[in-house]
Amino acid sequence: MQPGRPTVNSVPLTVFLYKRRPQAMIRFFFRFLGLLLLAAAFILVIYDGTKSIAANNLYFTSMRSAWELVNAGSLAAVRPLISPYAGGVLWDPGMVVFLAAPAWSVLGFLGVVFMLLGRRKKPLIGYARS
Figure 1 (cartoon, rainbow, N blue to C red):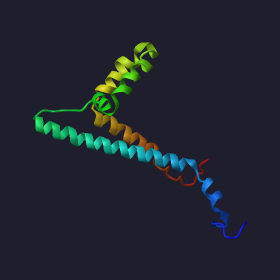
Figure 2 (figure 1 turned 30 degrees about the horizontal axis):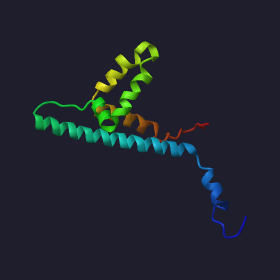
Figure 3 (figure 1 turned 90 degrees about the vertical axis):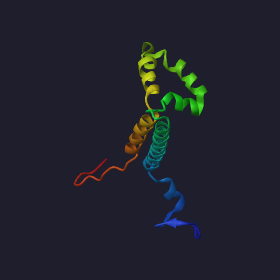
Figure 4 (figure 1 turned 180 degrees about the vertical axis):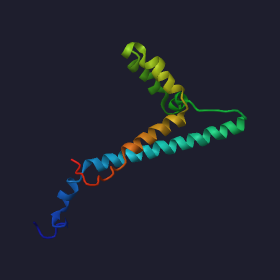
């Protein structure tokens, strides 16, 4: 080992940084993405609630209108990619129902799924995990 090089417990720092587990980074990414999706769902709940109170009527932002606000061109490009598969069943009942759902519920569901995927595994008592 060369003198003056940074070490962690007598292991060179570069070896220590590159031998970290990649699962931790993926879990962090899933938790971060889940948190962003939950925050977006909360913002949409507040937006829909404010609009419903102002209009004195129940109002939901559909996933289609939220997607069109973000990028309308990509929504038009997705249909030719999905519709030829499974005899058009993926688009007509599948994607149409998805696009008609309230945006806050879809984003909230996806946020919870990503948060669950990114959670740490509970340690097993008395067993070894391979």
